[in-house]
Length: 173
Image (spheres, rainbow, N blue to C red):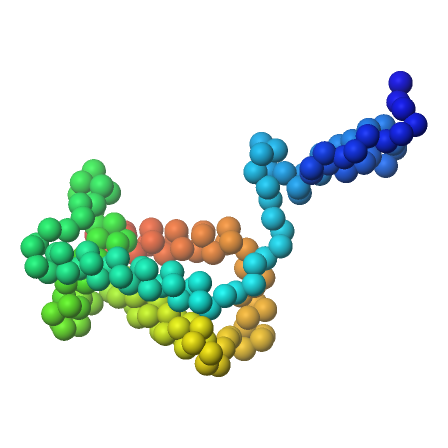
C-alpha cells in the first residue's frame, strides 16, 4: 500500500504525524490553494512609502488642476444613486480651493479629507527625509506596540465606521 520510500512533498504540504501521507499546510496556501498566504511582514521602506504618497499627491494635483482650470471633476456614483455626499465628495473642489490658496473654502468642501490630507502630507515629508538619509521618526515604542496589536480587520472596521458616521452627519446635519 505505501512504499518504504517517502514521496517528495509538494509545495505547501507537510507530512502527517501518523505517516499516512501528506496533508496540505493551511498556512502555506490560501483558501483556494492557489494564493500564498504570507505571515512574514515586510520591513518598512521609507523610499517606497514616500513614492506612494508622492504618486497620490501627483494624481490629486493633476485632478485638482483640471478642475480648477476647466471645471471638470469626477462624478460620484454614490451621490448619483442616493443624492447624498459620500465621505470623499468635495475632494476635487477642495483641491481646487487649495490650488487657489483658499484654506477655509477647502475645509468647507470636505473637512475630513483635508485633515487626512494634512496627516498624509506630514507623513510623506517625514518618509522623504528618511529616504534621503535623514533620521527615522517613529512612534514611541509603547504606542507603536499598541498600534501593532490592532489587526487590519479592526482598522478597516474603524475606518468604515468613521466613514459611515461622517456620511450620515454631513448629510443630515
